[in-house]
Length: 440
Image (tube, rainbow, N blue to C red):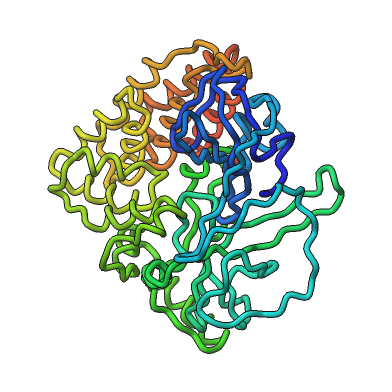
């Protein structure tokens, strides 16, 4: 059982009440039905995940933990109606390699586990071992523990920068909303030695969530956090040595692109093992992105440039090296396909220097967007996500031409009767691009 979020319960049928899209652009329509197979919080990415089975296919839907609209903590009842419990309860975790599957026990409500679990040492603990609040099953100081590049799925992977132990875990707990007893623990996910060896070559990271842009609540994939990248083979014997290393990495990585540091810190030489792919979706994207070149198929570059993909920075960097980069970017931004639009967004925010033609393109895009209300009846226009994308491009690329600023001011007045949130977004962007003069 995962954390409790509103009324949602794992292994129950659900019906979608309002249209919505998740962070990756997966769209669900009102009236669609499915079975909720998993539910939890991904604290490393600041996201809620929902594992939903529809017509024998399973999607892991992800939503920003701090979102201002759409499915989110405290508002799930507006988007999902709970149905009956399903009888054919499926196992929601992957068994360790060659480990016999145990008989399925009845589902139980989460209860606070007994404390006093000892600190573990060794490469891997047995599947489903309770390691309490530890993220790595080793005996080292937890201050040495760092997450790996975060992939999609309900599980997290961390490594110790002192002993090198890699641990995959799932988080369980109760947010205390109804019980008054908030707690969480981590339980290990059994992986093969091949999978652990592969993960040992993935960079470790340190994310400063306090340094992100605070423009407005938005999908996590659109927010850029200050991130420190550690080479996959990093080892430090003392905390003082770790502090010196981090200071050195900060200096080295300052002003360098994410793509540069992914290439410099990845030690991956082969595709992820099949059992890893069945547990954590996304590391295959990283491997595939590392194989790309500027002359690779455009469709592959655009697919992997989507900001929700783990190798997005690598694919985006290669797209921007092409002679036809600007035309590809504009074509993607104007596409009706949401995934291509997101790829174009990745290109526009990373283009250096900014092409002066981008201002006119953004103005044309804003003029073509509809003000039709959303079918969910939440006070938003149906195309709010496209408006948000254009606003973010203008802000992050620092497109501050007089014509674009005039367009934004006129649009703010036009949106006032349709979407108050977008009015706030425009006001924030204008303030960034054209700050008021300081009084003398």
